[in-house]
Length: 370
Ligand code: OSB
Ligand code: MG
Image (cartoon, rainbow, N blue to C red; front, side, top):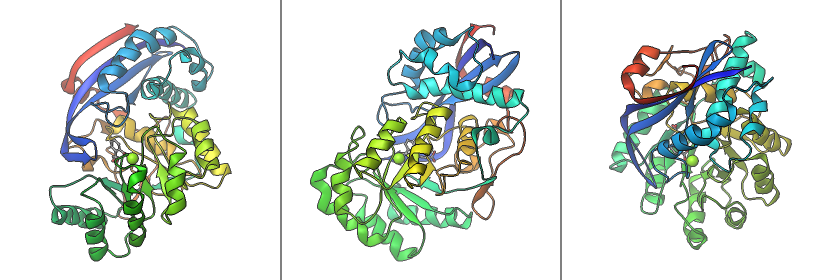
């Protein structure tokens, strides 16, 4: 496969409603898309970073810088036999997994289309229908949150994740449990607590949550083990897992009992699959996290979620939860049983709406053959 050209584009897409976490609120997404020309075939991927360096160090602007100045020059004009072979070409880049992931993930789609096979099957996927949950942000009031949960459950979603932070946690979980005693429920803190909050966090045990996600520091693995030893509720790591060796360390020191795998945060399909394999060998269930992706990133998340270890509902939900109009067709839909049926067509199985993307584009930059 020869990488003949790459185009970077930033598109702006307003969310249907704001999304708030312990680190802030997002109303409009600034999404970086990558279009790659491989052996005459055009394929797309999404850089899944946020606008701010509050979830990870990567932002829309740093990803553009790293891709344009470093990653793209390392791969442009190069030939690779398989998508994973692009990783050593970029090995000098430390961190910036989301930027590098966009290059590898585009190649996966190209490879699958060349082989006329569905991407999910090439990855080793074993399920053709994936279970879906929703991630619900911090709202202006508890009644507003309860109404949102009601609506999402009516749409069929199989588990509810709510965002928590000091001041929006035990009170909120208590209100949810009063109205929805049995719903599979979890809480994501995005690193809003420290070990000094242990006694407070242990109180979450009474709400029989399926897990608490990343309560402590974004860059910590093993101090989470001290909290896990005090809590009955399983801990799940998100922010701090970038590679298979992070997963191995977390499992070895008993820092978590579940792992959230994000395709961008782990650096692309091959690294995400390595994290999956380590977790699976240790009997640790995984699920696919989301980054408020457009359809381009979302359909890659669907393919990843077909691997056998993804036994828990992920944050991969329908296009309409985020966008008035998504940039892929068909749009991603969730069945009344709370699942996404995986498409059995070459590549991702979705087409990219290039005309709509052109209208949403705020800048573009071409490298090699345009
Ligand atoms: O921590 O999982 C997270 C969104 C942006 C940044 C971090 C996270 C999230 C979500 C939303 O929880 C998941 C989604 O619906 O895409
Ligand atoms: Mg998270």
